[in-house]
Length: 238
Image 1 (cartoon, rainbow, N blue to C red):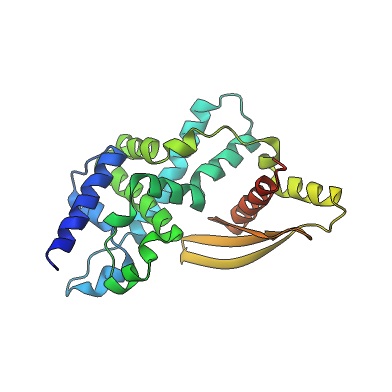
Image 2: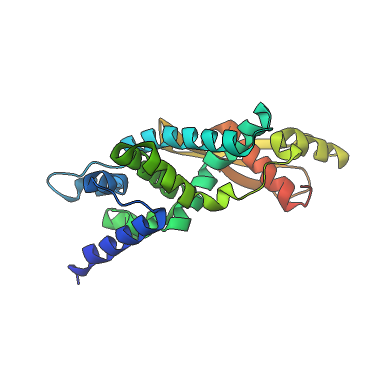
């Protein structure tokens, strides 16, 4: 039974490469990108984990997203570009990209962490897909990373540009609250996870009389904006 587990993971890694459209030359880079910290102590010589590659991948993602937006939206102003850039690079977008290409089964984890469901945790998936981008950049440069970005983020890239409310969602939420004769919306940090250089914030947005809504972002501000957008969308305001 134990001998079949590595085979299943190898199949998952092969499937991942097929979906991202890139085959790594340096297999060690891909393996590192897919290795969670919980696997560090599984052997006498622990494998490097994805954290350093995630640090690089976060920057690579930001560059690729900015380049895509400048090319795709030639008449968008800076505020619109910033808003759409945040939407492409925030935690939820990264998580959806990871889910689209099937990252979860390819992750190497310690048995306890895997059994606890951490393999499919949103912040882990977001971190790993960024690590894969970083690994691809080291393996094949910007062209390799761009191929993965275009495949993993294709559904995010197909979304329309943000509306005016999405350009300043906190203002839009406050204005909506005022039309209800309600106090200003409130925001509460529910949790902060991830590494120090790339944290993920979960924030809850509330408007009196309505159920609160939580969302994630790479900064508290991004998470607050995502929560405001989510609440406006849920209530049919935008």
